[in-house]
Length: 285
Ligand SMILES: Nc1ncnc2c1ncn2[C@@H]1O[C@H](COP(=O)(O)OP(=O)(O)OP(=O)(O)O)[C@@H](O)[C@H]1O
Ligand SMILES: O=P(O)(O)OC[C@H]1O[C@H](OP(=O)(O)OP(=O)(O)O)[C@H](O)[C@@H]1O
Ligand SMILES: [Mg+2]
Image (cartoon, rainbow, N blue to C red; front, top):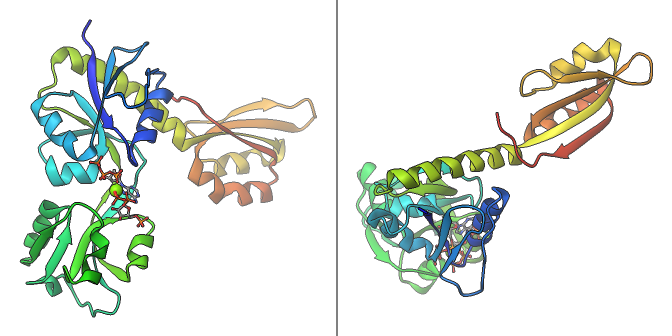
């Protein structure tokens, strides 16, 4: 039987969340420690544990059919590879930073400057689009230390909380791109594997939608029902059921989890009581 081959990061920031999303899709993987390859027991899928930075080449060569990878790495090394879905985790920026004490006016300030980075193509494309030419020093780790040891005037690296920049006395001055984990597909994927990708993609979409949504139940006096329902940004129309208590109804709906906090106060003020917010495991539209 044909199996779809997926690459995920062997160890590092993407590993746990990548395995979790497969698990949430109902895919069980026999996951031995230090394994480089594993199979699923209940989905025709083989997992290859690889380094994030090596995955674009494996996709290009068709060694794997699909991969979960940082979008920033694809932009740096695999602009020719398509993204099937953004996965909503490992969110970060790729930014240019300079010493805190340095003045900064515009991106033109990088003209002729030494920039340490692990993302040379990204920096080069960004600066070229602004008509700026800098001197790039490619290093693979601990990039933020470079200005402090006199190796560079500036750096380009991943920024998330900003604490690494802060610890190294640097300030972010240009955000070149934002990134998150993505599901990417090999240009060489076969028609048989594309059918399996479609099945997996369907499951991933329902998991992502469920992660973004909450099931809300509340009690409302019937004379306030219209006002309360108007406040709820639901999927379609909420379900309204009579309560045993005369003149009251129970309202059920699904809302975006971030929207809930925007409306909770207004719901209470409008007369809603006993508001329950529950997680949703899977959601298919
Ligand atoms: N501080 C961070 N916050 C959020 N996401 C991050 C952060 N650092 C990295 N990432 C994202 O996670 C991906 C993997 O980062 P990680 O540091 O685990 O691996 P790596 O050293 O870049 O790769 P490799 O697997 O090749 O050793 C990055 O490409 C980026 O998309
Ligand atoms: O803005 P922050 O929240 O501080 O995150 C940014 C840091 O995180 C990443 O390093 P990581 O911890 O993955 O170490 P690595 O360089 O060994 O990959 C990245 O290379 C930055 O140095
Ligand atoms: Mg890292």
